[in-house]
Image (cartoon, rainbow, N blue to C red):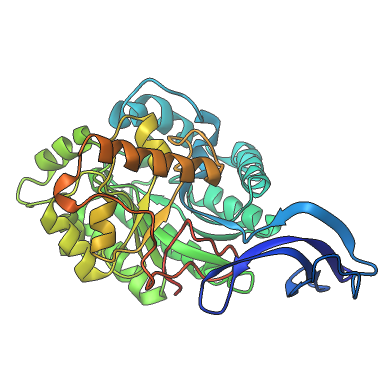
Length: 380
């Protein structure tokens, strides 16, 4: 690749993570395709711009970050009409069960291609329970040039793999899920010069035995990998959690007790949390992924972002496709603002002091590539 230069407007960060806008700048890309310089130009300047492609009128920004999404669910985008648990059972689990072979390859290629077209360069991705299709997703993400944290969905109870017991008589579903996830982690964690990272991906506590969750947490620690899961998304989910885990005082306590929470844990949704749960997340330094479009689409609710910020809990944004109806992170940002303003108008979180748009100075955007103020997960 030949080095290239572009003249256009640039919105970026300085060395102190402050947003900087340069209305007229020269952006240089080296032979590896990496940005190696951004130089501000004086108004009307012609010096040093010879040979640069003139793109004035366009704006270059850092790549966006989608901190929670589901590649296998992409064909179900905008499939509306149900709340979380019946939506999973009737719409999503049949779709994920078919996420294999050529179908997985076509879906993943389209998913990652559309993601890039929407300006997203970094994503945390759930795939499906199949090892082979997760391997395919990593290959497609690698070839697309994306940075991903991704993993095979782990489920050892209430799974959509109805044939497992007949096909794997000598191995338990728990052991198979752990073994396949570890093999994928060994292969992909840190691959492509660190662009590809692995996350032990526990669907949620309703689909995982305590043994699976505990050992997944230990494997994540052993490999320096991530954990991603769902937490307190929907009231029906909470009712089911209370039935399945009657001895636990809260949903978050289950994860804390089993060693799932930590600085590399991503908790999607966190809509219906008690004060003790906020404190547990603070204590373990776990991260929350706010999925406002999905929360609205499935009627799940509006989380208390004011309380998350008050506790300095690192919070990112996720499209949660396919429950979220769009991969466009600008749509997600817009919905996040609208949702919090509705919450303020209806005094949903009055006792917390509400939500402000000012970002605490100690928060840091994610490490390159794809740094974006919309996703404030700490650099690792």
